Length: 196
Image (cartoon, rainbow, N blue to C red; front, side):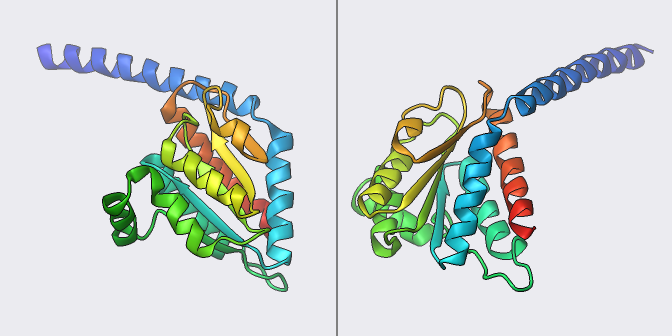
C-alpha cells in the first residue's frame, strides 16, 4: 500500500515536469527568428549550387548536433537533379581533435582544422548553446579570416557568437536542454527545406 502511494506521488510530479517542459518548448518554438532560418536555407542552397563546402562544429551536445546536421545535409538533403551538399563535421575526427588539443590548446581544435580545408565562399556553422565556447569562437574567427560565410546557432542572449557571424539563429530560451532540442530540430527543418 505504501508503495502505491509513493508511486502515485512520483507520477504526479513527473507529469507536471513533462507538462511544464513541453509548454516551455511551445513558447520557445513560437518565438524562433524565422527570417534568420530562411536566410540560412537560402545561403545553403546557394552554397550547394556553387559546390561550396559546409563545415560544422560544437562541443558536447552541440558536437552531436554538428555531426547529425552534417549527415542530414550531405545525405538527407540529396534529391534527384540537385547537387549534393558538401558537408563535414569537424567534430568527427577524434585523433585529429586530440592532436590539436594536445599540441596547441583545446581552444584551437576547430580553427586549426579549418586552416587545412576552408576556402573563400565556403559556409562555416558554429553551434554553441551559450555562444561563449572559446574553440567555437576561434573557429568562426578563422573562417572569417579565410573569407568563409559564417552562421551561428546559439541560445540564451547569443553570447559573443552572435557578433562574430554573418547570420545567427538565437533560440530564445535560457535552458541548455531546450536550446539543444531546438538546434537539432532546426537541422531537420533546414534539411527538409533543402529537399524541396
